[in-house]
Image 1 (tube, one colour):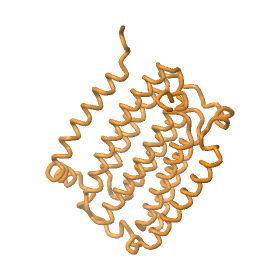
Image 2: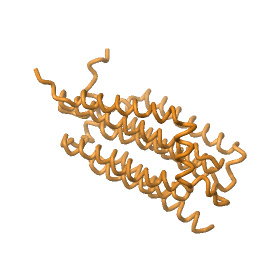
Image 3: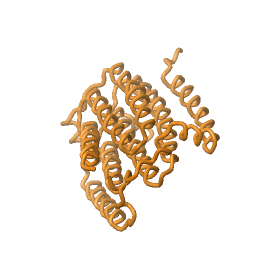
Image 4: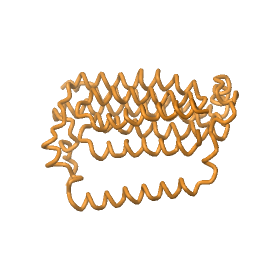
Length: 176
Length: 99
């Protein structure tokens, strides 16, 4: 049981630190690389939740395909770093009114989330108390995906082809 | 691990992503922050699915990943187009439609 908690906190730490680095790095290449690290932490959490297939897909699709796409664009564009001095002058969040309203909203949201989580009754029970063979089986996943979620699965193909055509059209060089 | 721990972690990741969208002035980092938010939601889906003994949570995760891939492809194509146009990735450079 103790190893369970230890693994959770280790992977959660990797994920949160990776996400914080994404937001705090000035150089976009480092942001993308830290996000890949955070995704590996998330994949570990999925294994702990008995979702090994989601963990593998997370690594292959997210860390492998989507992040490489980001990395390609960052390197192709040779993106300049953000200028900290200019940032301080021009950022709309530094206007006094925006600071006050934004801070008030953030505090309200945190209070509301804390209130909701403290009032919820059945979230204290262990998620993975007894092992569940059904939930970690890829066969079961496939069966549900291709029966109950068949329509959504087919609609996904339309979404992907629309996104692909859109990306090609948008990124094409205009010839005049 | 109690379900509450996963939910708090998911909320924390979502907050980090939101902060990134608001605080950063780089279109690529903005897209990366959106990816963090989508992944926070994925974690909540899988944790709830595990807690209730359903596979549906994991299946929704696949759909979220598909949408994330489509969003990344179109978003990056837009970023490339905008960069060609203005030689900048600062969102402040693209305010022609503002009045």
